[in-house]
Image (tube, rainbow, N blue to C red):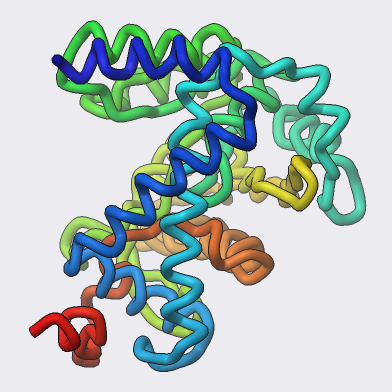
Length: 309
């Protein structure tokens, strides 16, 4: 059976399955993947060690890494279950943790100059739910990877579009993003992806240097669009937390040196904001590849693998 029919059947079953049962089933699958996939297990522990400030072999780090994969099942299932979400009910169960103003006021401030807004977020909590919430307020487009099977891609991207989130395929995205921004609209981008120094910009994240894509900041500088980080994640008792940050506006630049400095400043702001929310709930950060690949610290031997040898 193709992946399309598996997902199609899963959606039909999900619509008739209680939320708690769906979450348990999805978490069981991703937890088993964590146990069986050694390289991802080690990478996740290494990342969580940086986040928690502990050695990757520490018991708390191992527990947090496992919980991250367990929580990821719930987040992965959220895309499949988007059609069944009642957004009025979601709004009623969402607590806004934005400081000093509401998240809607943050967004209005970002939009005020009329030069568009880039909402930056990460692989944290539920980015699909975050997009659906924001799209209730403004026309929203989001950059997303496409699925190889065109039928599967149409099905799952359709779930996002049903929640008023237009999709910009990641391949060839910059041109379309610039069109959206120059028209004064909003684009959402997941920014937490490690890249090589040659391809990215350096930031400090949890006290360690790493390189991340410069695209979001570069497009903000080029278009004049505001950058506004925002996140939604799961809270106890079937509720949600939302945290938006004040918009940061790019400064005018007159040469390449100033442009590079501005790109770095904006990108660091994005990751300083993400660090704040990840600190609140590390098990909801889903980073399963080494995020600090330039570090020379050795990967700690995996106790599970050692016991099975």
